[in-house]
Image (cartoon, rainbow, N blue to C red; front, side):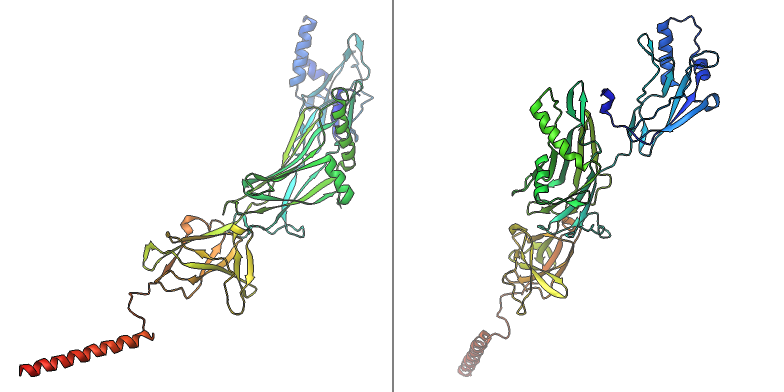
Length: 489
């Protein structure tokens, strides 16, 4: 093999050979008095800048590259009728997604190898991909079905803490992933790096793991999956509390850049993995995996997920690809509240106790456990209406409470205990969880009415005693008044 075996041939390229001899020499403008060095310099310069003028050229022949990227023109004439060596311009028509990378393809005859004229000439024009296949990623439900779009008016999904959020990422294995290059008896794997890397944009998120790997439409399981992970090493990120880093994973192919000479042991590892991955060349890899939010996840902040494929091939050619159209982000919702005396917003109230209620299929459920204990747990309100097991939210001296870790929806605060000296609310306080509902500017103010002074309440048993004492004092005063008057008379 030669040095060009390092490159992947491109099929489907149409080459058209144009005879541009007359136009080329006209633009070159040599007088014949130039030295060989000067003539060579001028010729090479024109070859790099020459523009095909089809009005001053002859279309000779066209052909298309085969599956290996090869095309042959065996019938090109070497000289004009006047004995002048010909000049050919090879025009390229590329498949979709590729652009020209090299200089114009011009062949100025004769082609020499030292002192010898070549009769067979190999040209290797380079092209580059400008529309590479990108990895794809979507959010899916438990059944693997793509989620519906973000609700109207929202910019990201709002989920409960603890809910598993599933992604499906996919990418097609390179067609040459399993190839071994040989040059001068030295072997090296064509690909020395193939890494799939995934990471969320906020700390405090837990990586739940990979639940499914499908290649070419076939799910890997048991021994197949074990073997896959032998060659594609899985590293999980952020799986342990307090989840202080970024959740995600890497799948790293056990490939390297060593050769059979530089480090035989490492090269053997790379070769073994390349030979294993060869069976998947050109097949789509689909990975389903999940993350979840925790009590350490920032509230009401959008969390995005970056999935990138990192590759290095042919020794040192890097090829990194990102998802072109990433799915919407996600976050967890919350709301803030302020308890104050009615008519006096600056007079905050401590000691008010609330529970959170939601309605589900016509039935009321209460929040049993909030994020400080893990995922929210919802329990149907019993017939007796007992809220003894509900999570209690109690206002401090600043009158503030907040509820976090909830998904988008409508909820209710139900006061179970009023501050001392105040009347308990008769009605629930409705609130919405959505994007930006946790902002300070949306803090919901909840007033309580005072019970008034400290006189005994009407209707109590104690009032009779007070009435009797009062009557007695009044009678005593009347009798005393009469006695005084009689004595005066």
